[in-house]
Image 1 (cartoon, rainbow, N blue to C red):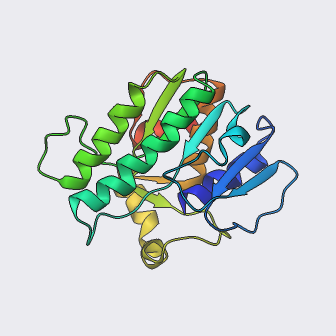
Image 2 (tube, one colour; image 1 turned 60 degrees about the vertical axis):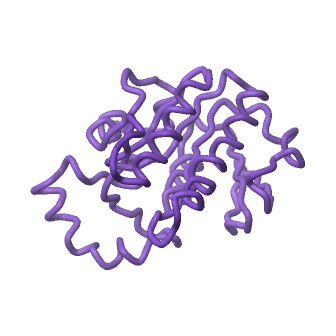
Length: 208
């Protein structure tokens, strides 16, 4: 859902010259700016490594729920997989800006009681300390979807009628998919003082 929304904003934005999309299966999106690579093994990028050069930003939007997963399984999907991408990209282009979609409640100390929050915190810390030109950790909470896109999660469709109330009574806990996409683009174009972006930061950096 987040990846599709960020892609949507990138393809519309006049300052984004080209986009490389790395997927296991095609997104079925056609656009003059867009190139898509289909690659099955996200834990080994050696076969596509040469095609990843020449880009000044990575918007890493892959993620999964921790529900029903052991610590080992969730760590492999969340930390190990992200580490593979980050390690590969910094070798090719350390001048890149790396944006990682984490989540509200992530534990930067890596010592809290909630397993997923510790793993996300470990992932954030690894990226922040790797040596990219810049890196930003995006921590959205409830996300208002972009109308017309295909991958809106069922949960968000179910709660759609409640979104106006959340915006009114708890604005610090909701941002839009559009705002996330624009904030990622602006993190490269303008930069931002905070490296960990909570909802209020995402909204501010998006300019919307």
